[in-house]
Length: 134
Image (cartoon, rainbow, N blue to C red; front, side, top):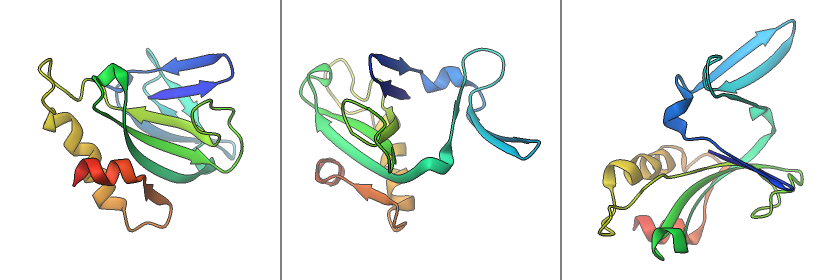
């Protein structure tokens, strides 16, 4: 999971975040926490997510192969240098073997997630993602 802000990039390996997403309410205040209280975690305002965008674009760090990213977009300028409304994103870690073969066990869950929610009007796929999963 990557959060970009001016002069700041925060990266979390999601497998190190423990239980994943949790919702807490206290005294009328709602917060969403990714990760457990012990160890690494962060708080996000999921109520600001206006759109979820699935993308796959070739990048140098993947040997010119597609880098699969799920963008959680807000309808305000998040000052993300890659996408103006990019509140946060999740990018796959090691989607290819050392020989460059796609690791289906890493890529397929993102494809399945898109297919599960693709009919939701807030979910969108970039042409590169649709091409990559074809």
